[in-house]
Image (cartoon, rainbow, N blue to C red; front, top):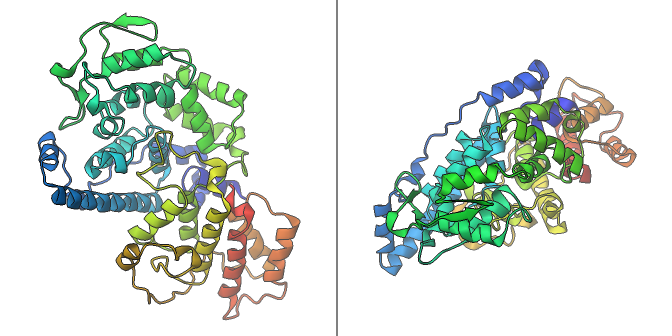
Amino acid sequence: MKESFFLSQRLGFTNAQAAPIGRVGIRKFLTLSLASSPTMPEPALLQGSPRTREELRNIRQMDQPDKAKFAVTERRRAVGLAHLWLEKMHTDEFPLREKMVLFWHNHFVSDIQKVKVSYAMWRQNALFREMAFGNYRELTRRILYDNAMLAYLDNTQNKANKLNENLSRELLELFTLGVGNYTETDIKEGARALAGLNLGDAGGQYYNFWEDKGTKTYLGKTGNWKADDMVDLIFDHPKAGELLMTKFLKFFVTDSPSATLVADYTTAFRKADFEMTPMLEKLVDDSRFTQSQGMKIKDPVTYLLQLLYEFQQEVPPALFTQYYCNEQGMKLLNPPNVKGWDGGRSWLSSQKLLQRVGIVSQLAGGKSLGNPKAGRQMQSMPEEMKTMMDPENEPRTKPALRWDQTLTKNKAIIQELTDRNLFAVSPDLQNDCEQLLKYDFDAKSSTANLSVTRLAEHIMKSPEFQIY
């Protein structure tokens, strides 16, 4: 794969940024990405989703049938939010920001199924967008006051006379220091420090009557600590940053980063006072990143967006993308648990691979992904979803594969498609490609585009295409 295509995929989701990276260079492109706007207009679909304590109280006071209707409406809003986010990933000129939003979403995990309020999930997503390239310590501080996080990890139930340790535990175990770098006493004392931190109209706030006002000993320091103090104490710990840099390297470089690589990035991260921008700059300057082709399995979102780009398709209807992401184990705004998605080999079970291959067949065959009956992998979709998606008789469309139509020789076309899409080409795959697009290929033939599309279909179904 040519380096510009590789960098476009790793720092975004598709090959869309390969040309500008080739023109201005990766450092300049990173600078432009860092300067990109963090804003995304609040979607109209959030109208009616509760956003104040009073509105939430009104929901709790509804009778059961109205509560059930509200829950259905919020789930539909969440499907719409996930779809809008997927569209932004697909169309953004500088998608690195959305890539980092996805990174933070899988680190500071919350999910709509537990939170239940789509507006709260939207605000959290907007926070990740705002802080995408910012300071890890400050983002940790702000996430402790995030309504979605407070609801997800049950800090709404954490009161001085009845402690709930969930947020305190995950703050240390999964969000900052990692297992082995704290004690059970730290978790209990942390829960005391977080007691009374509950939902507020503009974000979390402490409520005096639920607070624990006594002194606490946390990570070896004693005082009347609150959330802000906890964050400062955590980031003074010698292990602060290591867990995040391990995840950062897994996300961008390799599914299995070495201890040496993690140590190098952790040292640099601490020297940068936990700022993310210097780490992205280090990343693009590092040959261990630029030469890491073939070390990551594509996640389902990246895989789908790359296919849509190569076939010049828009993001399919919301319920298709929800179904696809759910079947592939990567439902946006709804990770499986507080640990998030495991990634790596978990993306490639035999069933998931069959679903991926089926989508390639649909796109190469000109079938709309909005049609739930267009392919075997859609057969188990619930009838409710089928009726809410595009009509079953959606017409075929002409496949619109991206390829350089100035090329006339079969080997040149094969080279172009593999340079765009594959980290390596085995002799067997090269031979298969030359059998599909033979030496006597006529680029002026009326069937030329179909022939090249069939070649691309074979490439995109290959094991090599699953890795980048």
